[in-house]
Amino acid sequence: FFESDICEALTKTYWWMTPAIWWPVAAVMCYISTESLVNKCMIFAAGLFVWTIFEYVFHRFVFHCEEIIPDHPVFLMLHFFTHAVHHYFPFDPLRLAMPPALFIILATPTYCLFNVFIPTQPLLPLFGGIFFGFAVYDVIHFYLHHGAEKSSFQYIRSLRTYHAIHHYKEPDNGFGVTSKFWDHIFGTVIIPGQRKSAKGKQL
Picture 1 (cartoon, rainbow, N blue to C red):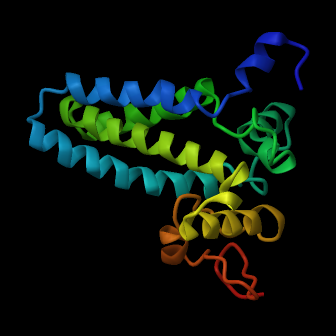
Picture 2 (tube, rainbow, N blue to C red):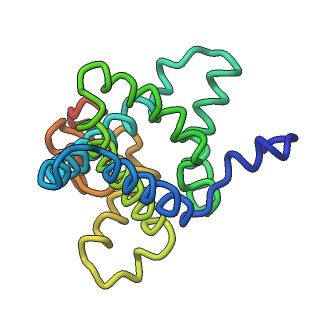
Picture 3 (cartoon, one colour):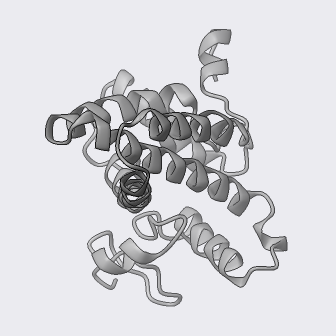
């Protein structure tokens, strides 16, 4: 996509890079926190839950913001390479996982914002859980596109079907990738045979 080899490399990601980078980062964040072990475990679990909210919110309101982004080449390019490229080339294995550079761009201001309200020591295991959950999400997302049809787990196969409908029929619904929980809460769940708008209204 880019003439620059550097830009091209920064937008390509092997699926294994996400857990290889962010699981150790999550472990270090938990380790260096001065919270007690019990507190770390509880806060880490809370971080996993917070990630599920991020997964839904970022997918719906950041990655699918086509109607509100400014009509400017810079913004259009950023949108294309954050998510639109994945919808254009859903089976490109190197354009599926989130590039580390992009995740850092999104995660850094988010961490700083949280740090305004939450002290650093409990925030470290919280974001450890968030980073761990993100890596799990990215691996599952890759698997849904490359191999889930062969899975022996019905839940995984159902997620693959659900995600495929989001890609090819209902891009304004089905924003959950690892679960349908928040789609149910916010009325964007995909129901076979019943198409809805992004606001959850039946069409």
